[in-house]
Image (cartoon, rainbow, N blue to C red; front, side, top):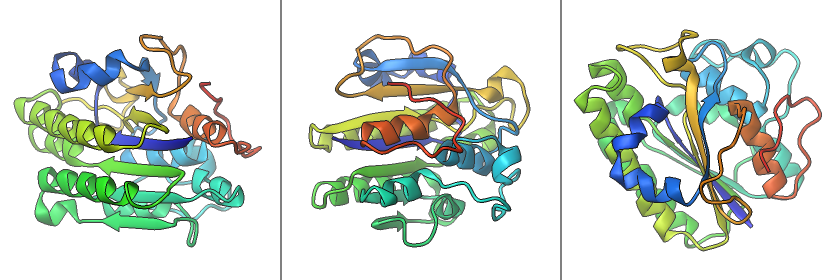
Amino acid sequence: MRTLLILVDGMRPDALKDIKTAQDIIAKSSCAMDAQTVIPSVTLPCHMSLFHSVDPSRHGTTTNTYMPQVRPIRGLCEVLLANKKRSAFFYNWEEIRDLSRPNSLAFSYFCKGRDIGYDKANDMVSAAAIDYLNKDYIDFAFIYMGYTDAAGHGSGWMSSTYMEAIENSWRNINAVVNSLPEDYTVIITADHGGHDRTHGTELPEDMTIPIIIKGEGFEAGKVIENASIKDIAPTIAKLLGAEADEEWEGRSLI
């Protein structure tokens, strides 16, 4: 059993109902379309909470500048490494590098979305993941796609440009998922939503995220109740036969 986590930055679940490229995977998955992120609903704090299964008040990163933890809590990659599992990252926003501690990844791929454009950068991280995951054995892979958030800030959440970014993301998601060996469980989620041209508040538009899980043991069409971004790390740990860290606050969705 292997696990792939795909995160589309700033993807609101209510944007997906008109995205045809999303519907096939959603129909074959267990889903929480009303899962909740953490406060502040800002990219790096939300990612830190995803990977460390605690609130920002505990991991200490409350803006998009990483803050070393005063009382360190092991993240998902460190827990997996302790269980002899291999992890890989593919991302186009450089701050993602701080989600794992040095030496905890077997492989990482980065391209700078700010320089080349996040639309192209989404394509590049997806192509890199397809290439690498089909030639080397990785227990846990993480793909980060930044185009949707950039489009939201540039043109507004739910704008035509934002919806084009959602379409781009799901074209890439389908390409990756369709290329994978059959033993992968795939989790697709977001860090936060957004409204107008911003996010970070407690508004439902900012706080509500999708969690979509496709794989063995996850019933097609099942609704996952009361899910949180903090539940993702415990779920992945359990899928890979690792014990969740005792400091983690989330629960496994299995």
